[in-house]
Length: 140
Figure 1 (cartoon, rainbow, N blue to C red):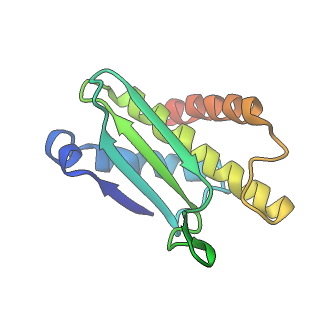
Figure 2 (figure 1 turned 90 degrees about the vertical axis):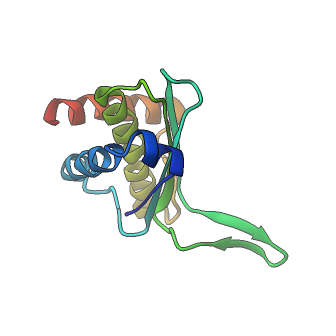
């Protein structure tokens, strides 16, 4: 896993690095489809001090004249935005949720050959990730 913290995050919340590594260890034990070798996790400060948000995408692409190019993170990209006043539970829930989406993408690839959450639709995927948050939180 390639973990990147923005300079602001390193300055104001350096403990997030160890939190994410602990969460990752628990999440991988619960979901064997979460792949870390080619995963990039980017963490930045949320401008809203009491809010957090995140998203996961299956593969990192960019557009060129020849078409799409897959970069060095074939197992996906997670982006986390964490406010300064967010607590440990918020960080656990956010990180576990997005890691679960990475596991869902890999289950889709096993079944369909492409990184997808199928056969889950968007809402099923979200409910599954929310349930996973609770399971990780119980073990932290």
